[in-house]
Image 1 (cartoon, rainbow, N blue to C red):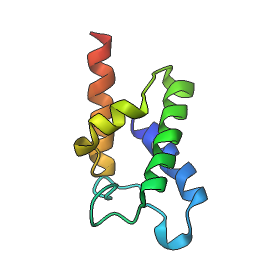
Image 2: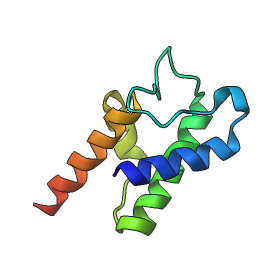
Image 3: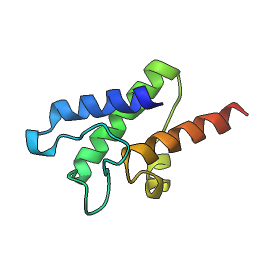
Image 4: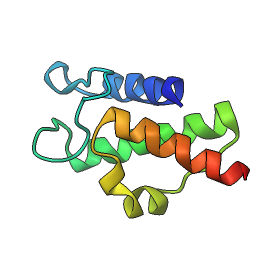
Length: 92
């Protein structure tokens, strides 16, 4: 999942102005006061994630699933962990 999250952030960064670009580190905040992202940026990130998950892993992730689990998506690292657990559980 690390590579998919990385690619999705790279795609988002292509859309963002220099001062809002995200660093691809586990502790980088995605939501909350410390995040540089606005709500539309988060939507764009999740669209990139959805596309990359489908293309690379043939996994589906809906926007509703993201909204229901937003508390698990505060940082890049927590996003990676959420996706890993979600798709491991689907295999079982």
